[in-house]
Image (cartoon, rainbow, N blue to C red):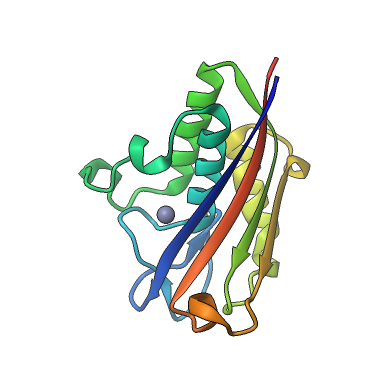
Length: 158
Ligand SMILES: [Zn+2]
């Protein structure tokens, strides 16, 4: 049995916060604001995985009103999501994600993001794809007000 899911996440870019995407800290003048480490890539991916498994969404499982998730690494959230899928007998076939950001250039950090995700999900790096694009300076991402991430996931129960 195959099932698919999609996820979407946005965080505001602000001064005084780290920019963490796919568990990788990326040098930049701005970072993502949020309750956890605000890793939009991993949040979109978690939502895609939860969606595929019919398990709702990230905010439902890890409410931002709960202090135990304040500043938490989203790799830990991804690990917990993966555990939930495994408990239902699912494993991840592949994932694909697109980061939407005007700045900074993300391409050189993508291999490390893919490796972090693959390690956390217990799958091979070629089962995890991450892409980055700009919006040609259009919209909130183009104005560098925020960063968006889209993800899809295919899971299988064997
Ligand atoms: Zn988020």
